[in-house]
Structures are given as C-alpha cells and as structure tokens.
Length: 279
Length: 280
Image (cartoon, rainbow over all chains, first blue to last red; front, side):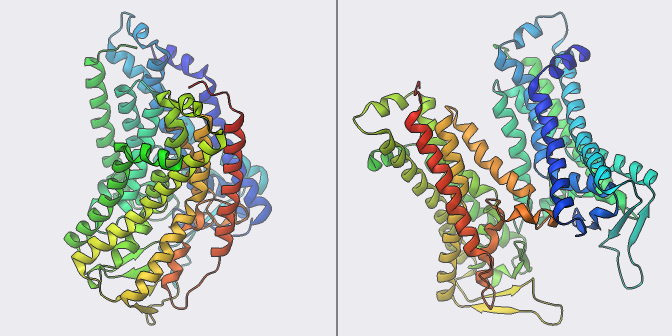
C-alpha cells in the first residue's frame, strides 16, 4: 500500500515543484549572502550567531533558520493536505477505497507517504543549504557563538570539526521536522474533513499562523509553551549547536508535538473510518 | 456603481464577520491583559516599546496594532480584495454584472474602491475597538513609553504621551499601517481578477507576506539588498512615532514602495480584466 501511494505521489509534478522551490530559496539566500554580505554575522534562532563565509555549514543552518518559519509549514501542509483531499478532488477516492483493504490501512499508507515527503522537505532545505554553502564557502570547521552564554569570562564560541558539524546538522534537521508534527497532523485532519485540497492546506498553514499570532499577544504568555507552533518551539533546533543544550525544552517540545500529533491523527482516523465517501 | 457595489458587499454576512473578528480581537487582548497581569511591563513590537498596560488604556491600541499588522490585518485585507471580483465569479454572477451598460474598467474600479474602503475600515475598527476597550479597562490616561532600542539598564529613555498627543500619533500610525497594507491589497486584487476561486487570491495576498517575512533583514541580516523592496517588512516603523525624538527614517521609502506595488498590480489587474474572457 505504501509503495503504491509513494509511486502515485512521486509521479505528481506538484511534489517536485515544492521540493525544488525549497532548494531554490536556499540557493537564493546563499547567493544573496555570498555576493553582498558574506562577512556579516547571521543569527540562529535568536540564540546563536555564525559568520557565513567561515564555513559552508553555516549556510545549512541559515537556510533552515530562514525557511522554517513559514515556507516549511507551507510545504508540510501541502503534502499532508493533498494526501486524502487531493484524491477526493480527482474523484478517485471511492475507487481507492473499493480495493479489499481496510480504510485505516489506506489512511495509514497515505499518512506515511505524506510524512515521508514532509521529512524530505526539511532534509532538502538542509542538504541544499549545505551543498550551496560548501560550494561557496568551503568545507571548514563550524564556529558558533552562543549569545546566551557569552560573557566576559567565556567567549561562548564552540567550534565543530566538519564531521561533528554534519552530525549536528542531521540532529537539527530532525528537531525542525519534530516541531512541524502538529502542522502536519492538523493539515491531515483537514484533508480528511474536506474534499478540497486547497482548504486543507490553508487550514494547516492557518494553524501555525494563529498559533504564532496568539503567542505574540501580550497577556496570553501562559499559553505559550502549549501552543502548536511558537517562535520558542521552532527555535529549539539551534540548541544542538550549544553546550550545554537545553534538553528540558527539547523534551517539552517533543511532548507537545507528539500529543498534538496523536490527538489530531487519531481524530482523522476516527473520522475517516466513519465518513461517507462520496467523491 | 460604487454605491451598488457597496450595498452588495455590506449586505454580506462575511463582511461583518471579518470586521467583528477584528473588533473581537481587540476586546480579547484587553480582557487577557486585564486578567493576567496588567502591572507587568509589556515589550511591544521589534523596537521594542516598553509599556505597562494598567497605567493607561492607550497601551491597548498600540499592542493590538503591533500584534495584527503582520498577519491578521493582511489576512483581512486579502479577504476583502480577493472577494471583490473572484467572489462574483465564484457565484457565477460576474457576467451578469458585466452585462450592464457600463465599461469593464468602471466595474473594476468601483469594486477596487469598495474593497479598499472595507480594508481601511478593518484597520480603523481594530484601533477604535482597542482604544475604547482599553480605555474602559484602564482609563484614558497619560501613557509612559520606554524606547527599548536606545535605553540601557541605568538610563531608560522614557517619553510621556498625553491623551491629546496620543490621538494624533495613533491616527498617523493607523494611516501608516493602512498604507502598509496597500501592496498586499493590490496583489490580492490582481489575483482576484485572474481566478474564480477567492481563496486562491487570499492565499496569494497572505503568501506575499510570507515571502516578505523570509527575506527580512531584521531576522536575516544578509538579505538587506532585497529587504528594502519587500512589501511588508517595514510595516512596524510607525512605532518610531512613539519615541522621543521621533525617528522618520525609512518611512518615506516604505510609502513610495507601497505606491509602486499599487500602481504595478492595479494596472495589471486593469489590463487583465479588460481583456479577459469572462465565462463565470
């Protein structure tokens, strides 16, 4: 089932357009920085600082930092929102379900493929950032200035040799993907509820926007740690470049995202099992 | 024509729903502030401006403008702009609207005028609702504002604004935020003439703010070259009207930029709409 669904999605132009656009934005950012301000320090999630022309590894982190706020949620919402509603809008959902396979397995396969593509989106940003970065600035050790811990007694600079920098980038990519779980699950739920993929995608993006907007409202600070996407939560990936990393915050992020993911995907499963599929 | 279009839009529940949500947002902010800690210092915007809500209700419109100017207001404006032409197309009534003995250009401009008026109204409703609810909760008193960008721990730069002065500066800020939505309005309106699905045009308007956010030098200093041409990045400069001395740097550039976006995209809308095959 998963293989069938994967082949179906990979044949679609939209999937490749989304992935290529993400890589292109990473390339564009590298191009602009390389030509105009290669020596200007860039911030990582407001907590760290790197100088782009010191190493190609900086561009992977800078690209992630720039794209994860809005474009990655959009890409994830597209993959999740398209999964069921896309099929409904072509009118082929009922034929898909006519196969002698349980609805839950169909939904499971669709979810798995959409999740795989969403993860691929995050990986594409990291890899494209790294590729363009190394091409322009070279394969050098990565020096990260920790803005929170820098003091007169401690320069706050950590240097990662290329191997370690690569491992940390992998970890950062996974944490970014983790912070997008709630967006993915909500878009998937919307995708089950509606027959129009556009509505499902808009729903997923709207969740992150409303969550961020609520987080910015003074007076609602207490809600912050429990909202699905916030500046604090999505900025935690940068912790992999700090020593010590804020492990407690990462654990809280994982908890919140897993709970949102489980509840929303559970709701999607319940709804899809009982839904009258007319399209 | 404008009057006809105006009545068509104000009869729609959606128009009132958008305006009501905007006003409700201001009230919710006030209630949240009053309930959770009006005596705390709030950091407003990227400048930031520091204020204590309890000392004056005038803090609420500043907070409301800051927290809506980058997403909620662009969304409201996109909704009005997107609905104007594509909304008619979606109902299938666009060709009947054009069957009247009036030029297409006049239809288009009356739609643009009404959508623009509604967009302006949404910003004004927000500020008025915030001012009224804030004043009822905390009183319309003199507001002390600390400029977070120039203050140091020992030397806070505090400016006291009397209510009369606040009305003036707030009106100017509202105008500035309205002007700052013009680019988004123009793009969403242009998209509205090209599609029969209003949501696509809404997404285009909101998408433009996303692109603007990605190439924002406040968060990514390396993209300064393109930052100054992004439609929504300098929307927060009105906050400098509340510092002493008032700093107007960047405001003329931003207003000219908005004018350029408006001219380009409304002309595109005009060209597109006057030549389009209308099938809906």
